[in-house]
Length: 412
Image (cartoon, rainbow, N blue to C red; front, side, top):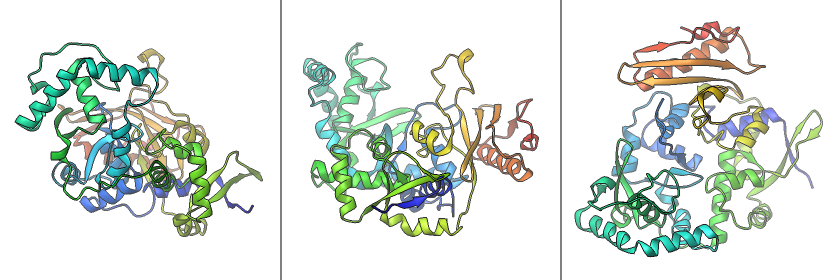
């Protein structure tokens, strides 16, 4: 069998370009943001706000300084985007509703001990379930704290709930598609019935399990550029790719995807690698030298690096989130942003934004061992930090006393 051969550099450039982190910057209007989410598949949500919310940072890395009003309009007025569970809690496309509805229909219906525990808890708290739905139906969208329900603690949780019964029931009703997030007041969610949140044009066809995997696998592969089956399964609707090997074999027979290999120093990397045939023209352009690199900062939850094993393999970059690591044991910092320079991850910064004072403080700047130390590189990093400050509305940047040798020019 003949495989299309890529060097590690070409593989990285394909992945980065498909992530819109190289080439022409996308437009920062509603259509540009919508197209961007189509290509990425989802924007992971995370509650940490020491710099900015992760979805906003993911867009910043690709758009530069932008107005978030179009994103809010897509979410809360036009309803072309909504919040649901992709590889984590995420902003996803309303046009992908049939893919996500599969999880809504099957959530907690399995045979695991956790599934049985959730079902038992829901049955025991059926009055609470009905009370929440009744309140929303009667009074319209409201914050969880305004439901007027006497609350207690306990029960299974899927994530960031407070441990209170009402919060856990809201999570359950959200995961099963009965209610949706209709807006936000800061980090507080405004809940409403799903039927009032979804626009009339929402596609509602019931897809077979195979068709869901068929669509999602192609979305995942295109977002990644080049990937192994394990990497495909880790992306977009993470862990919900039943019979993926069979689906990939069918897609290959239909010439929608094809095998590839990454060869370094004459040796092929391990594993089966695939690219989507729609990306072959892009791959050929990149191979011919049509490459427009950029330098930017990445969210800890950026789609390019959310698969840590893939990040290590492609970029030789060890990255882990140290939010929950005790401060004395942290290696780099609380909320560290990797520095993407062209086709390499060359360092990281540990920033915190003081909104009250309008000050962006960089606690530390780190360079990877082989990071370039040229004037052009330091200027590009400095410009990326300045753009971040502008995006955050900072009036001042405080730099650390020490910076990596050769990167002194980062401090403007």
